[in-house]
Image 1 (cartoon, rainbow, N blue to C red):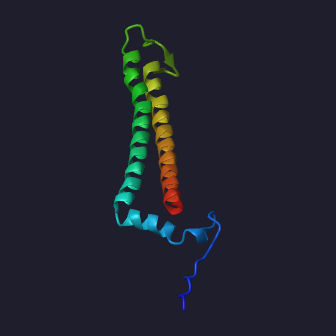
Image 2: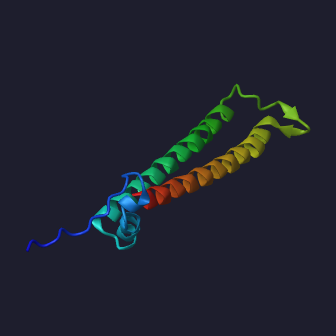
Image 3: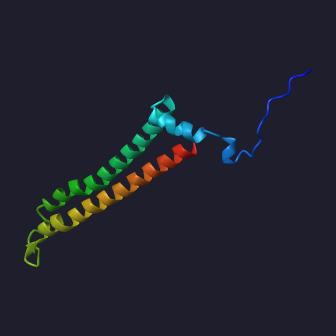
Length: 124
C-alpha cells in the first residue's frame, strides 16, 4: 500500500500565514548578530552617519563663514541696534537658533531612521 502524502497548508502569499516565523528570524538575526543582522545594523549606522555629516555640514558652513564676514574690514562694525553692536547680535541670536534647530532636526530624523529600521526588521 502506498504511503499517504504529507499534509501541506496552502495560503495566499500576501498573508502572514504564508511566512510563519520569518519576522522572528529577522529580529533574531539582529539580536544574535548574525551576518544578516550585521548587514541590517551597518545599514542603519551608515544612514545615521550620513545624517550626522549632513547636519554638521549644514551647521559648520555658516559658522565658518560668519567670522570671515564679521572680520572683514568693511563689515558693519559701527552699526548698533539697541545699544549692542551688530556682530554681537549676529553671534548671539541666529547662531544659537541655528544650533537648536539643527539639533531638533537631527533628533527627529535619527528617531525616524530608527523607527524605519525597526519596521523593516519586523517586516522581513
